[in-house]
Length: 405
Ligand code: CTP
Image (cartoon, rainbow, N blue to C red; front, side, top):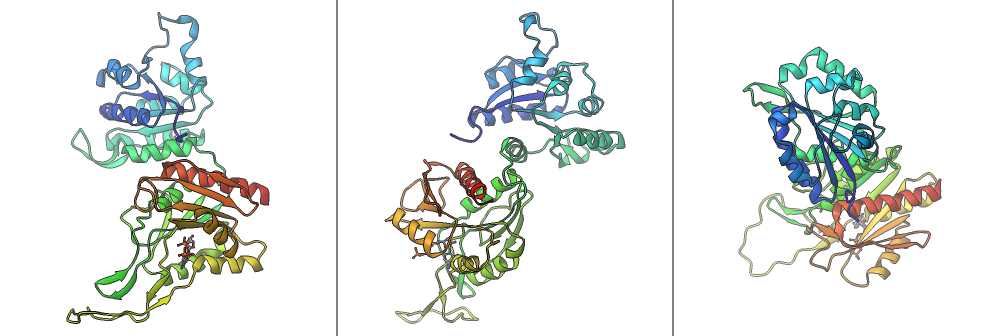
């Protein structure tokens, strides 16, 4: 089941011109299967209509402490109890002040006070207001209560000023929501992930590579971060920006990847080798562009080191070696090949990736994997987004870690 499906999100909207932007957030959350209930302050209702939010969320919108319709339900207590997460966006300076001082003078502030679920606060206001010591002190105070604050973006504001204070973009808010909801089973882990293809240069304009885009490895890095890990990503050439909070080391060839993996080995407690490493490189690399002219050209290839196999050998000699996870990209005999690689490379876990399907493997949005571990268990994961697949892999890693420690 997709990760956000059936999660209950309570969205508190306050008085800021950015209120209209969260209308889209509601649609995005519902597309991912969330149930969204909206609470609006009186000022928020001046910026955007509760009717709009009711239509988009598919639920009644709550605006007052004392509803004539159902006085017996004690809305602030029930709403505080019934959700997985409270997101306050946009959060005005006034509301942040209310939260910091534990005021309960409107429905939203009362819910926050009465709630024991995680609270995510997304400030949006004029940059001078945002930078004022009073606002900064209030933000520090709510952080000390355990509220998570998603920093606003910098840029031109509705009031024509420029600076920090613009409501964060949805993608950053989404990551923060996932982090608040994800199980924190990697909190003490230092995770090293390799991702993407490698490129083996022939001359300055040509190289040997493969169609890997790095999507699966980047999803693993983002989700490990959401689950509380410290994450280092060693990435071959891709078009993705590193996920927020992830240290990213860019490499090109297999040899460069091997050097960086070895450099990072000491700090790691888990290694996941999701990269599609080129098995061969050119015996010779030409310093200048090779000109055409010959009708045929034979090029000699030599084997690259198998980085994962080398790690497996080191693991044999070291009982404290990081948990080792490999991938197997297969177009046939998936299970046999996966089992062989699990054993030959001395892995704790292997993720067998079907690269033959139209919705699985290189460059696709989704994946369908089988996870095997060295204790003999097998999990056939259905077709899911790569992000969901990454969560399933971390669940499996969590089970192996629990059995080892
Ligand atoms: N791998 C590696 N170094 C290599 C080749 C592969 O570290 N030179 C790692 C990959 O990152 C992956 C695993 O080994 O985690 C399996 O890669 P895969 O391409 O499926 O298999 P190979 O071992 O290369 O074997 P084959 O090409 O024969 O299927």
